[in-house]
Each structure stands twice: as C-alpha cells, then as structure tokens.
Length: 307
Image 1 (cartoon, rainbow, N blue to C red):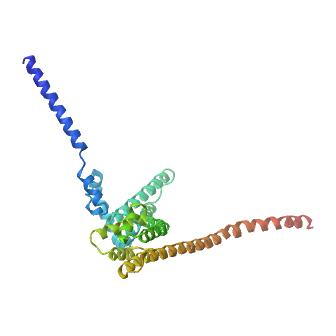
Image 2 (cartoon, rainbow, N blue to C red):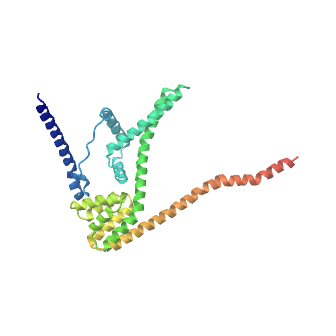
Image 3 (tube, rainbow, N blue to C red):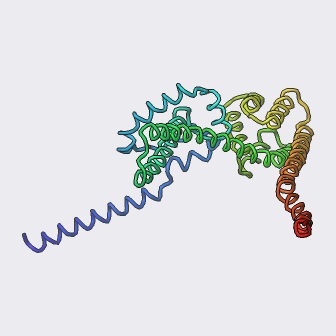
C-alpha cells in the first residue's frame, strides 16, 4: 500500500474517532428526559421509573429458602395486618413478606451466635444434643422477636419526630393561609421548605391532591392511617375546615396550641416518672448506706464494752 493510501486510512480513522467523541460529548450535554419532566411531576413518586435491581447469586440460591421460612414465621406468628400498619407508621417502604424475610435473617444471625457459643463450649465440655437444639431454637425465636420489637421502636421514634415537627408545620401552614394563599398552595410551600417525617406525609397528601383527589379525602386517609391522635385530629380539622368553609388559619393555630399543650403534659408526666425512678437508688442504695454509717459505730462500741 502506498504512503498516500496509508495517510488516507489514518486520516479517516482519526476523523471517525473525533466524530464519535464529539457526538458523545454532545449527547452527554443534552438534558435528559427525566431532568426535563420530573420537576413538573415531583409530587408524583409513582411516575418515577423504578431502579433496576440485579438479583445476586446468593439471593437466587437462598431466596426460595428464606421465602419458605418467612411463610412459616407468618403462619406461626400471624398478625399481618398489625405488621402492615406498623410498617406504614414507621415509614418503611416494604411489604409484610419482606419484613418476614428480615425476621428470618435476624433469627439466623442469632443462631450463628448460638452456634459459635456451642463451638467454644465444645472445646472444654461436650454439650448435649438436646441442649444444642434447644439453644438454637431459642436463639432463632429471640432473633425473630427482636426484629419485631425493633420495628415497634422504629414506629415510636418516627412518631416522636412527627410530634416534634407538627407544631412548626401547623404554624407555617397557618401563616401561609393567613397571608392569602389557598390550602394547596400553602401546603406546597411548607412541604418544599421543610424536611422531616411529617413533611413527607404531607408531601404524599399533596401528591394525591394534585392527581385529582378532593382536598379533604387525602387528609381523611391520613387521619385514619396515622397512629397518633393529635395527627389524626390535625388532619380531621383541616378536612372539616375545607369542607365547611371554616377559617383555616384559626384551626391551624388552635391545632398547634393543642400539640404544644400535649407536649408539655407529656413532659410533665415523663418528669414524674423519672422522679419515681430516681427514688430507687435513694431508697435502695443511699438510705441503707446512711443507716449503716449511723448505726455501725454504736454496734462496734457495744460489742467492745460488752463483758
């Protein structure tokens, strides 16, 4: 091949490479479809395409076994409705079968610790087979119940954060409504400028309203699904105020005042319980030591002076 032919080939290769680079740079600088569309549907999380999840080999091998064990736990424990309500109140995006699988995993981890203990004990003393089986079963049940208790603790923590956030959100809604905004616009303003558990619940309410639901219906659903009486009263108050035309700002100010009063009452009750708990070391530790220091010298003196 002549040098001119080689030059033409190399020049064509270089031009093709530069063309590919420039086309890729132009495609990467072009705004993506989700970047252009999602800002207008940010309140509709169901329209966001779910992320593709890859199934690992471990999940493919042990997934059916874990699912069967989760079904067994469900048959033994039951209470799927209670678990579903607690998952909703905890703000966890998982179904009951997924929670049962997590319970099985916790139980298997507990069984692993029990097996490690049995292995260490076998180095010095050979445990009986019945004891080993009973210990493993007890560990598995403990792990399953520990996950259930952890879910209850998650519910309490989230409800505590909601109660701390509720007065501020109610005051912000009241100020927005008093400034002349509609309930939906005030709700949108508060949701966009606040972050928290209760704001996430209000964001879901706003998303349902923007899909065409009446304003009162999502708040009624929030009142029925919430496990907190004050949140249910807050949602019902907004629903009734929207339906009957009651001044919403006054309702929201009253709701915020009620929540703060409830918080003060809870703080006083907590202080009373802690006061009783503080009496335990005083009565069972400090008082016996004080009595001992007071009477011990006299007892020693009597024992020395006695014939």
